[in-house]
Image 1: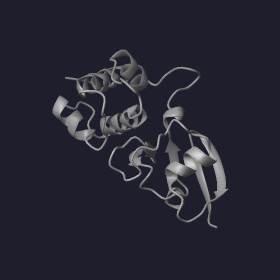
Image 2: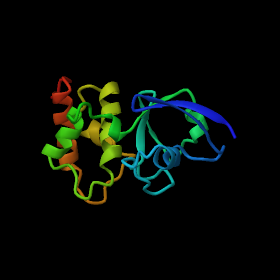
Image 3: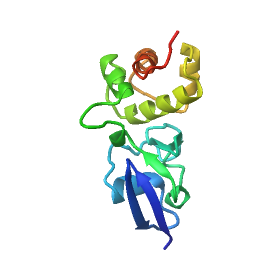
Image 4: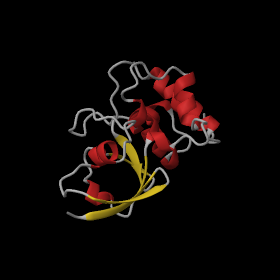
Length: 158
């Protein structure tokens, strides 16, 4: 079995993995990062989105061996010292979730979006999150949360 070295939420791991193991299963089953949900297992919903080397990826479409030598951030890795990341806080304060299943992926995709477009319009936010599906909300609160999160992260908003 191949041996991989990854840094997940600031901690380095060296693990033997089966070549066909998906990153989402590695994170959940091997490392206990259950905040990364398994949604559709087909890369359609985006619930399993994590940051890999700073870019959002759907962890159900990445093999664990492809993450070798990478730095992964999951939803659990965003908070520090018990304090939520500004985007997590914004999603909470703007009521941008109902069941919460898609929320980890939405938050991580939003953080990546703001790196590429620090002052997105509402349409740009919707387009930037289009690979992340929510079956409970109408996306209005999610768009407001991303805008609020950007402001709290020190990113200028319209």
